[in-house]
Length: 338
Image 1 (cartoon, rainbow, N blue to C red):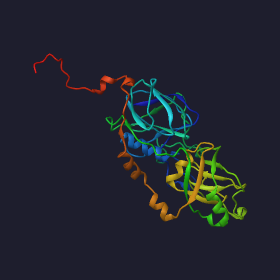
Image 2 (cartoon, helix red, strand yellow):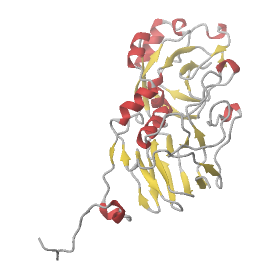
Image 3 (cartoon, helix red, strand yellow):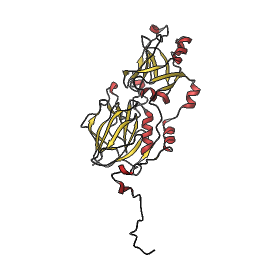
Image 4 (cartoon, rainbow, N blue to C red):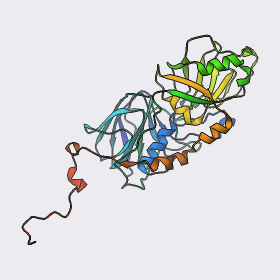
């Protein structure tokens, strides 16, 4: 019998996610996938397994889980309080979860999206080359209490008990932006003001996009009503009819007629996705050459993270299975002849 993860209690917006479905834009389907791809890379590095395996994305709050077999898990993304049978777990680390044990994950202390990874990945049936739920596209559904999620074959069962320093993407900050097809439609003074303005994420938003609030005049092109609907992509910064910025996220629409002042670079998109209401964000334009120089392919990022993985230092007082660690070997009775 294959291993499974039983969902005893599911948070309000929990889905299976991987790297999504690239190449489907021509068919009207956004790429989708994890809102925070860096978190997927961290999970792969911690468990020593390839990219592309599916994990559980938890928006704002986790849930309660039970394993049918011994499995390895890793916790990444927005930090959430987690414990295994009442013993606190370190975040951004990998752990062994024994058969029958209960994993409880609470609310996020910062950021929006936390991730639960398992050794071998969540092995639900793929659709169009991905296991990712894309709810706005009608693909998949939210995870519900009582679901049994199949776990794939884990080929690295000995690799657990590791920790990885997290990349800070939960406190906002400066986000780099590439000029888009409409950037030149915005007057110079509007573009300058856009870079000088501090924005804040509003409560309005989901996996389709994030609305940003700001003080001052609206951001408009003067040609707002003459722009035709055309192809859009993840990271585009739309200026709605009232001049309000809206950053498109993984399940965004694929066609729209609002002007786009720029496009967030892939490496900084997690900062926007993980920004909670009130988190400050600033935007700065970079050239194509600068963006290419700063870009890290996910495989490269995974290799870099793998070198940063360290053994998890645990408190012996909280290790219920202390004897299994064989901290002392070759012990003698003390009566032997020396």
